[in-house]
Length: 150
Image (cartoon, rainbow, N blue to C red; front, side):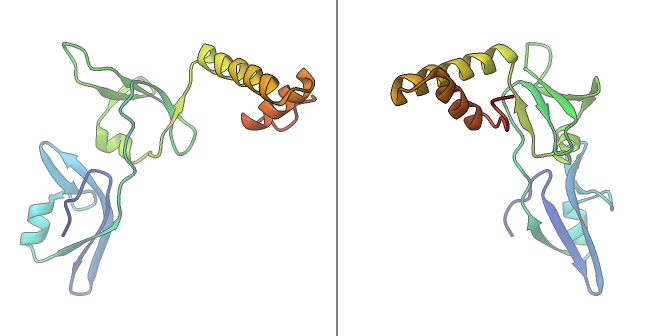
């Protein structure tokens, strides 16, 4: 069997008993969430493990993110005292706790978004010609604005 990772959805099967859950971390061991057993112990107790769905990779770039339900998260940068870490609602979260809320979408700082919109507007206006209104309508569609004419 391929190596399992935090957040993978796995199925543990022993005869008629089937347990489906995500792989999490407890201490330094990968565990099956509902059972709380290390994956090694699951196998030693006669279960066979199979991967149902690979985990969605977590982002690695520090910044602000929204999760699969639209809630806000912060991924703090590593410094000389702390490793890179996740925070939800101001509370420290482990990678396995964050993995449950994946996938994450990076929230771009407003000045970065503004620069991207302005650059796209200039690029579109210069390449297509026409009026600035046409360029703005084109760029608004590119950035997902549904009604550019307001």
